Amino acid sequence: MDFKNKVVIITGASSGIGKACAEEFAKRGANLVLGARQYVTLCEITADLEARYGIRAIAVQADVNKQEECEVLVKQALVTFSKIDVLVNNAGLSMRALFNDLDLSVLKNLMDVNFWGTVYCTKYALPEILKTQGSIIGVSSIAGYRGLPGRTGYSASKFAMNGFMESLRTELLKTGVHVMVACPGFTASNIRVTALAKDGASHGETSMEEGKMMTAEEVANRIVDGIAARKRTLVMTGQGKLTVWINKLLPALADKLVFNHFTKEKNALIK
Image 1 (cartoon, rainbow, N blue to C red):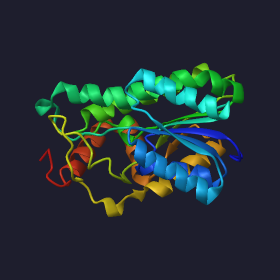
Image 2 (tube, rainbow, N blue to C red):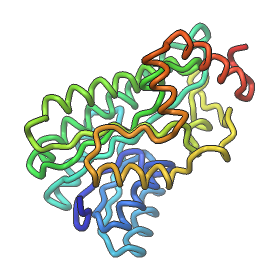
Image 3 (cartoon, rainbow, N blue to C red):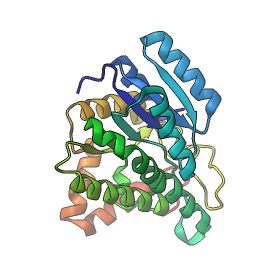
């Protein structure tokens, strides 16, 4: 796909992978509709991208767990650009708490943002993407293939996203619409800082060595390349690919390896 003058909607575009995707699409000539709760930050990002790359970009304040705001996001894209070529469902929350200690509202919040946010945006954008035979992307996680301790709500929401995207891809098989699930693995971003604790408050610090992870910019480059090549699934790290395969072939071993891995994180929840 040549992205010149294509119209791309990105949710969760004010930081991390979403912001990096916006930059990567802008480099390739796409016009952007950026959605997130942080409207002032979004306006700064759109102004910067327009100035540096000569593209058009608009900021739309949108909390994806609110159905009506997802509808407004898509409507604003159509009012401004009259079409939609790519939808990147990137907005997401993480968590870090043992299920036994967890307030159930945390799980609901994770599902509302990570799963229902994807469903709402896809529902409203799909009629237009059918017209352009464009792409629908779900930014998922290895946690959508393998349940991770201390991340019950996060894993559940990403498993749900993966199932939704797989079902949708099959429904759209003969339409020319491209559906891709991107699974970055551990990425250096603020997602662990903003991850929800057992009571729903943000942790405020990361539990992992961020410097050893893929950068958001590298993830964005791979996602945009994957869209251009109309790939089905992107599992981006060797560790992620190994985890997926061991979990399929030797699930009991995967339990032990994942357990041991998470005993080594900062302030480990399991020992």
